[in-house]
Length: 548
Image (cartoon, rainbow, N blue to C red; front, side):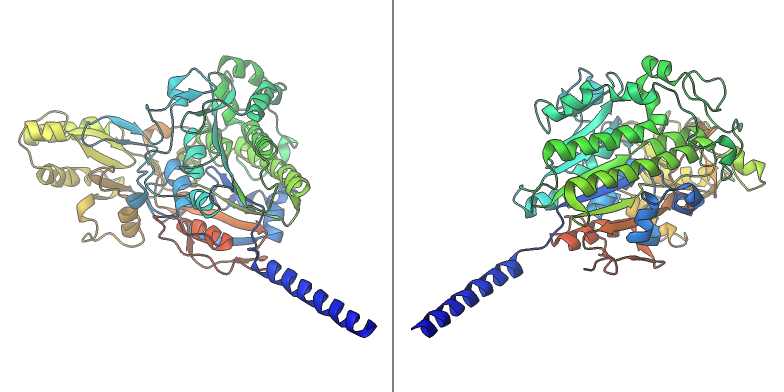
C-alpha cells in the first residue's frame, strides 16, 4: 500500500514538474524595459576622443559590457534631427516615412511646415500654442515603439522625453502613453491633447521642483581643471558663439542663473539640459512604473544639449568636451538607477545619434583644411537669374534642407514648365565652385553621381514633401548661418558616421567594424523583442548583437 502511495506521489510530482517546465518554456522571454538613448549631434569619434576623461560606468560601461558597432552610417541626406530620430525608430527613410526635414515647404500652398506642428491639438501644461500644439500626425510609418504597443495589446507602456518636441514625439510614435518636451516659456515639461488632457501627477510633481533653476544656480564651469582639456582648442577661440549675456565664449559662465531667468532656453546649451532630461526619464520610470512587470516597456530618451552646444560652440570647443564629460557622469548615475529600480540585466539599452556635426569653418581654416561658406543669398541670386531667363519673379519659393523648392503657383500663373525652369536652375547652381553636384530629384537615378551619395539622395527625397533640386556641397562647406559653432545636413562622414552600442538583456559583448546603417536599429530591437518590424522598415537585424 505504501509503495502504491509513493508511486502515485512520484507520478503527481513528475506531472506538476513537467507542466511547470512547459509553462516556463512557453513564456516568451523579453526584457522588462528597453531604453533608447539618442545623443543629439554625437559624432562617432566622441566615444574615443574623450575616452581618457570618461569614468568606468557611463560610456565605458556601454563599450566594455555591450556590443559596439563602429561602422554605422546614415543612409540618406539631409542628415538632420527629425529625420534621424524617425529613421532610428521606424527603420525607414524619408522617401517612405514622410518626415522630409525639421521643416519643409508644402508644394500645394507654398507655406512652411514644421515636422510635428498640429493645429488640431491643444497644448497641455502651458498656454503657449506654438510650443504645445504638436503631434506625430505627419509621420506615415509606425515605429518600433508602436509595434511594441501593438504586440502587447497596448499593455506595454511607451514614454518619450526630450528638450525638443520632435525628438520626443517622433520616437514615441503614434500610440504612446506619453511624450513630453521642454517649454521655454515656463521652464516646465509639457505635452499636447494628442496624448492626454492633463499632465500626469508625476510630471506636475517634477515640474514643481524647479529643477532647471537649481541646476543653473551656480553657473557653469569646467568639471575638471581647464588645463586638462587637451582634446579641445583653446578657450575663447574665434569660431565659438556666445552663451546668454557672456561677452566671450569662456569659462566660467557665472551669469547663467540670471541668463536663465531672462531666457529659459539658455539651459539647452549647457550640460544641465541633459541632466534635466535624464532626471525626467527617472521620474517617468517611477511615475509610469516602467519595467515594473513582465510586460516590456519602452523609454525613448533624447539628450539634446549635445546638439545645442555643438551648434553654438563647435566640436573642438572646451564647452562641448565638458558637456560630454558631464554626460558620461549622468549616464553612469542613470544606469545605476535602472540597476536598482528595474534590475541589472533586466533591461536593454541602445545608444546612438541622430546625426554628427562638421568641424567649425574657423577651426578648419586655422589648420589649413579646405573649408568655407556657401549659399549666401542663394535664393535671391537664383531668383534673379530665373527672372532674367523666364520673366517671372520669385520662382524659387525656398531653399531648405539643401533642396530648392519652386513655387507651383508662380509657375502656373506664368505658364512655365517645371522641367524647363529646373534644368536651367541646375546649370546655374553648378556654376558655384562650392557645389559638388546639383541634380533634379526626378533624375537622380540616371545621374553620374557616385555611390553612396546617389542612393542617399534617393532615400532622402520624399516625392510629396521634398524639394525639386538636391544640392551636394564640397566637403566641409557650411551654410552662411554657421559663422560660429557648427551645423550638419550632408552625406560626409562627419555628419553620417554615428555611434551605435547595445547593452543589457539579450545582448552579446563585443564590437564589429562591419558596415551597418541607422535603418538597422529598429529591426534589431524588433528581433530582440520578437515583434513585427515597423511598417516602413527597410533595415535588417544586426544578428551578431543578439545573444543569450
